[in-house]
Amino acid sequence: MNKRIAKNTIYLYLRMMLSMGVTLYTSRIVLATLGVEDYGIYSGVSSVVLMFTFLNISISSATLRFLNYALGKGDKEELRKTFSAAITIHILIVLVIFICAESIGLWFLENKMVIAPERMNAARVVYQLSVFSLMATVMQVPYNSTIIAHERMHIFAFIEILNVCLKLGVVFLLVIANWDKLIMYAALWLIVACLITGVYMRYCIKQFKECKYKYEWNKTVIYPMLKFSGWDALGNGAVVGATKGVNILLNLFYGAFVNAAWGISDRVNEAIYAFVRSFQMAVNPQIVKLYASEKMTELYSLIFQNAKFSFSLMWLLLLPVSIHLETILNIWLVEVPEYTALFCRLVLIQSLISCVQRPFVMTIHATGKMKIFQLSAGTVLLSGLPVSYFLLRSGCAPHIPFVVYIGACTGELLVELILLKKWINLSFRALFKTVFIPVALIVAFTLPLSLLASLYLPFLLSLMFSGMAVCISVYFIALDKETKAKLVQYVKNYFHSNNNLL
Picture (spheres, rainbow, N blue to C red):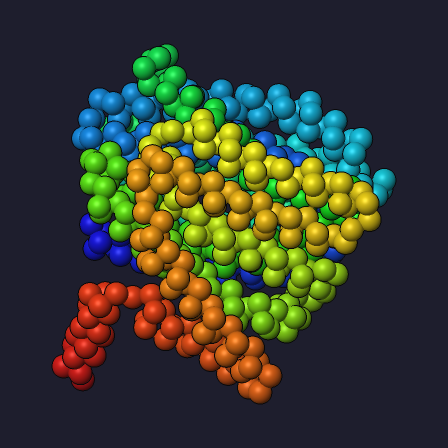
């Protein structure tokens, strides 16, 4: 199992490295090409559309959970029925998204968004193109979920690398285009979304027998999935509301230029969190399968290790980047929007909490007990949005909603741990000993050293010093004796084999 996770993680990291590089490069070019105002318009308008993704995220979680559960049980017929049910549900989700986007979303765009009158027509076109892009992306979910459930991460990585390369082509076309660049950018993203959906569909239909869609309203399969996703929609609605909702609030109170700063911070966070997401994506199927096969001791060990190493991976990048953020932004971007550095730091802190959360959230998903979880955790998280609204309305600075969101995420984590204590007898003592104490020691050791190094060392040397400090602290603090021994032996074998070749 551990070898499979390691192999899948490598594939996902190869995909992530390319994706991160392209994301950072294209963000610079798109911002320079569109300009701060148009970039802010795209960020704000797309956030309105993406508010409806909580429906898609909810059913995608249900799809992956039920596919993994069927695979864990080895029931091929249940697997086939689950996939067909997922396709049926996703078609319904697409219709619901279209209706909501063309009514509620369109009204909000026309009546509430702060957009310069001369760019309003372009914003309307971008909105419609973004709606269809989202619909195409929704239909990918049953297919890429099947690939992930079968743990064919190399295929998932290759298709996502193709996706990244196509998006890189979008930027090159954008630079040389003479047409309205904002509209063209949205149109090219729609084309890419449709192409990638087609690739996922073609591969899965050829490779997996369960991917032959057959319409049947099977209540024993569809209703549990809808019930699971229905409660999950509350939590995902809270997540989307707390992230995309913040961007919309910033538009209402501060306009498109602050949206541009949010957009850049979101790209930075996406690039850094991709390291952790790749690791977690490789582990998540095993969490569900261990729960389905009732191997609880192995489950506890896996989620604790996942949480600890997810934090360590995130901290490895977050620490040096946060310390030198102004320098990095000035090197990376032609023009740095106001508030960008502050937004980036706050968003990265929130992601640090989220990366620890994810293994516990996936374990709750494995149990299927979504009602109490989403009512409690979702309410805690979503409460940050009205609080942020009233604070901004009272004249608070634009970074305050990010601080509120950090507090809400911390509260959500506490709720998740309390529920897992009740449902799977999660040991708080083991949790603190295995996860929280080691990560606290890592932060306490590396943060002051890295801050001190930034005062006396040149930029590149300071970055390297911070990275080395994190790696050393993780080795001595986070790794157990068995893992250390395996790592040392792996390094010895690697150098021994290379010496023999020489």
